[in-house]
Amino acid sequence: MDKPSTGHDPGTAIDTDTDVAIIGGGLAGLTLAIQLRRQDPGLRVLVVERNAHPVREAAFKVGESTVEIGAHYFAHVLGLRDHLDSDHVRKFGFRFFFSEGRMDVDRCTELGVSRLLPTPSWQIDRGRFENFLGGRARALGVDFRDGAVVRDVALGEGDDAHALTFEHGGDTATLSARWVVDASGRAGVLKRKLGLARDNHHDANAAWWRVEGLVDPNDWSDDPQWLARCTPPDRWRSTNHMCGPGYWFWLIPLASGHHSLGIVCDGKAHPLETMNTHDKAMAWLREHQPRVAASLEGHALSDFRFMRHFSHGCTQVFGHRWALVGEAGLFLDPFYSPGSDFIAIANTYVCNLVARDRAGGNWSAYADVYQQLYFSFYETTMTLFQDQYALFGDAQVMPVKIIWDYTFYWALLAPTFFSGRIADVAMFGRLRTQFERGSVLNAAMQALLREWGERNAGRPLAIDSRLLDQYHIDWFHELNRALADQLGDDAFAARITGNVERMGWLAAEIRARARSEHAGIGDHGLDLLLEGEPPPPSLSAAWYADVAA
Image (tube, rainbow, N blue to C red):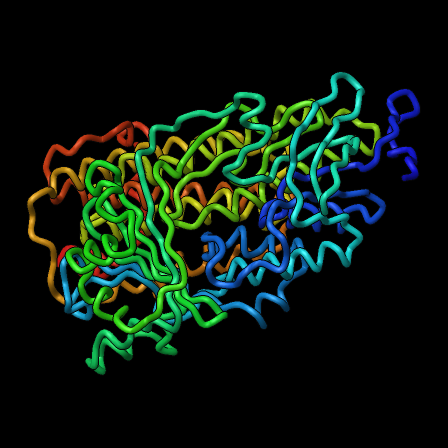
């Protein structure tokens, strides 16, 4: 194989077989390969993937629900909008039913939108999508070796190349690479080799399966008023969350004609041993979500899997011309579907580092900064899930928490990615105070919400049927729409500042509502954060009246 110069300064140029070797050709690895080649068509990219392609549709991997950052990454950064629209399901937002032990789901509290919000996302059949990504990568000139097994990675020191040894087609090859990226998922090839695993103490487990056919929530009721709440009546397109104390259950439709189902639970409240076979999982479902269990009768099973302690951390994700992306590095919790978001962010950082290296620039200092940012996003997002599962069945507090969590996401991280500024170190420096204030506000709010839920313990859940419609919260709708705005630096900085101010107003209002329910509820630092003039209302009195019904 010819070994041309990789484009570095003459003093540091080295001959290699490839510029970037990616271990793992799943969602993280293939999207990274595509992004690298779109950024620099002259870049030599190798992907080594254990699974032979094409893979099965429907019964392959979970992680089917996308949210705004990941959806924008797939559709616009990678240019895949047409494929998403034609071959996957346009998502009807998140939807939450507080339906523990209930057959009459149409009489429970429902949180969601009655109409589509402006910024799109999709339900993705992972097998179908990864087959498409493999073809797209090859069309862009990526050397994609599927059905290959990595046997060793020898990381070079200084300016030495890395060496990747793998088996493919009965042969063993060793290739040299300027960069090595581990996208091998939970196999964690580099993480294990370098001893980078870190326990994040989020004790949650999951069991999931796929069935043939559509599971349509509209079949759960013949009440015309309930059916007419959504326009069009497409609840089945949502990521439907059936919520109860210490757990949630997902329903996600797949365009291949299957439905994805899963139980995610606090390990202490709902031990994995009660759901680690399909029979046990169905028995669990009949107890906790009997209406859903009944609707699954007659649907053929496609697969079943479970995982203990699915959430994990990592001590380092960017090193000396190596990186970890996707689940090979960090994984949070699937409740708000952040997995593809963090793939998008990590891949974008890798692309920036490789480009700086190719240009002969100082990439290593940026690697340190990007890692600090990435870990800060991870740690802040983890507060949304950690020690919060006890709240999930609270039909009063949990809807308020969900509004807060969305607001936090759309106010800071999402607009930064949408604007193309996720790797803009100068802008992060300029807005450091705003991001820090947003992070501190969020930490204080998560503590307040947790205490509010604890004080509610033992109270009967509301039984009246009502839709808490996020679509008609004007500022909430506008936060979602505004993600698409293309702004100059000054206007963007002003937007982020205004978003943090909105967070402050919402925090003050939620604190006041909590104190109206429970005198003396702790301030968790909010009194100091929110001192000053009373803010204008963020949520309508009618919305809160519905929550408190």
